[in-house]
Image (cartoon, rainbow, N blue to C red):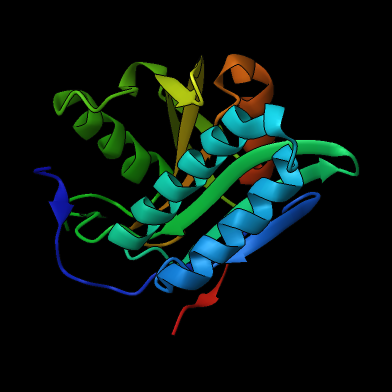
Length: 214
C-alpha cells in the first residue's frame, strides 16, 4: 500500500469485554493450543456419534483460526464456548497489529484520516470483502469493518455437509497515531450472518485501548 509506512512501532493494547465463556489460547504453543481446541469442540458439539460432522467442522474452524493467529504473530486468540449459559456459540477472536500497517507521514493521525486511507488502499488492492466495508465508531475506538463468507464441504464417515464460514475483520485506528490494530472474528455459523455480525459489532464497539504494550 503506497500510504503505509513499514517502520516497526509498538501499539497500545486493545482490550475487549467478551460476553459469556471464552477460552484463551496461545497459538505459539501448538500442543497446548490443540488440547484447548479439543476441549472447546467437546463442549460445543458433544461426544455423540451423530455429532461427528459438527465436531470436525468446529475443529477445522478453530484450527484455521489458530494457524492464522500463529502466522500473524497474533497477540491474543480466544475461542468462544457460549455467549449465554446453554447457548453454544462457536466463534474465534484473533487480535494483532499487522507489521507494515502504519500510515505514511503525509497522513494525519485522526481516525477519519487513517481509516479513510485504509479503505482506499483496500479498494485499490481489491481486498476480498471490501464491498462490505463499513465505518463503525464506539465510545472509545473507531474502526473499519469488512466481512466475507466461504462455502465449505465437510465429510465424515460417508456423510457430507455444506457449511458457510463467516469472517469479520475490524481494523481499529490507534488513537493519536497512524497505526491500526486488527481484530478478526470467525465463525462456522455463516448462515446466521446478520446475527453474528450484530454480536461481533457489539463486542468491537465496546473495545478500548489501554496502556502501551511492552
